[in-house]
Image (cartoon, rainbow, N blue to C red):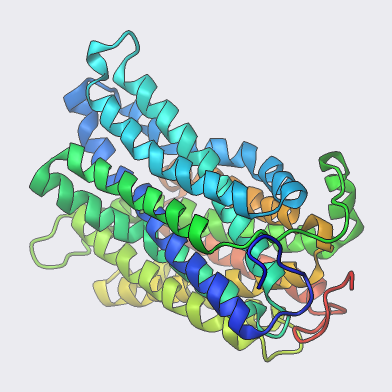
Length: 421
């Protein structure tokens, strides 16, 4: 493999293993920095005199930033290749936690701590946009349809595991050694990922001219499957990262779900750990399985049904056993949906637009993750958990019907050449 340019012809699996395997490590290590913020920043608010509202803004502003940057980042990837933008992305993710360290002492500066934390989170959001879209673009370019699902699943699994690892590491490090060291370790992990990317990533870029960003709406409209894949990602992230994550603590408290002496917060953490673990394991397995199917969407459809069953069980059986099984099913549903649909998108994406369409996929997902918390809490206050979770089950079945109607028809089989070849 040439160190500066990787051709887009179907490469041997060994090449995919080298590049995508390195990406798995990179996105896992880089994701740790994102997870560290969540158990530490809320606790820092009172110590630094930051209001709960502003703490919420600090925690969410990275996602708003990434929502805006996703598609421009994809355009850059299509224009200049994936190597330099991804190194930049990993570097920004590594620098952001050092901004958190600066925020601890910003009370002595003209700007306040909250401003520094918000700026650092915005930096992380920009870096994350390049890393996530770049990982999709790189894996798509260095794989063939016959092995794409496997490596998309592995990379996505690495992303999924990095964040909860950061949650655990951040909490333990902050409790044991203080916030400074917790943030510094997260930053060092991100910069390590940047070094790894610089050492191993080739410069993959399309061998055709990329279309302009302004043409992106026409590209999406020209193939309804692209919008359908995005819509599924929006709903899955809306249900999982939006609804479930936002209501888990309140649900455990309202239904008296207990594990030993743990509080509702502790129970919700265990519950979400089960769900994330189920999603990560399924993600790593199901992509490879989809490579052997005539149509990858055949995996996504039953996964959405499993997701719906999980929410229905959560609504109807509010016991510890019922909740444990429900969140495990939800995790399986999430993990069984995303990798095959990402690989499917890679199969049908025009060569010069892989980065942009990866950005579109992420825009849909970030939009769902952003809207979920805005809907979850007001809705549960009005209709209760049972009705809300049953509505979530219905929404999962509805988007499953969209998959059946749109993606199970004339899509190219997973072993076929991409649509533009």
